[in-house]
Image 1 (cartoon, rainbow, N blue to C red):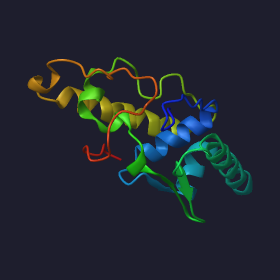
Image 2 (cartoon, one colour):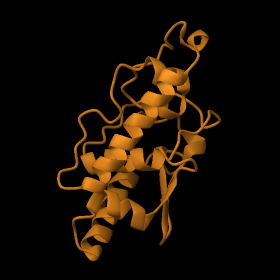
Image 3 (cartoon, helix red, strand yellow):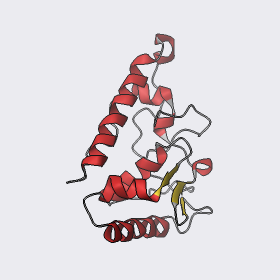
Length: 162
């Protein structure tokens, strides 16, 4: 992930990376808190899951505190990724088609089967999208087809299936 000035922002927590992916994959960039808690902390008691989500949100806000806009906004019921201010690779069909990386490669949330089910479904959806692109859309890879920072396209691109 990169800041508006191009500086790399290192998100070191697997749960924070997963949280960003859960939000980025939603058509609106918004998810219910309870849905997120079920995916990332479903094996924990409700209060512990709520506290863990608050902690990850705090860490993400702290990481992007110098940005001119909030990366993540939350209410008592929802969490929203500010899609109008960031670029997301998985929202660009051509980047998805040319990527040689697996979606969330290396991210495993131990003991959270609901997250693993979601991740498997997302990977299948992305693979289906990639294989369904017409050949003329796959002539040459975009320069950022294997970008590491996860920020390349605007939200006006077609949303991926939820």
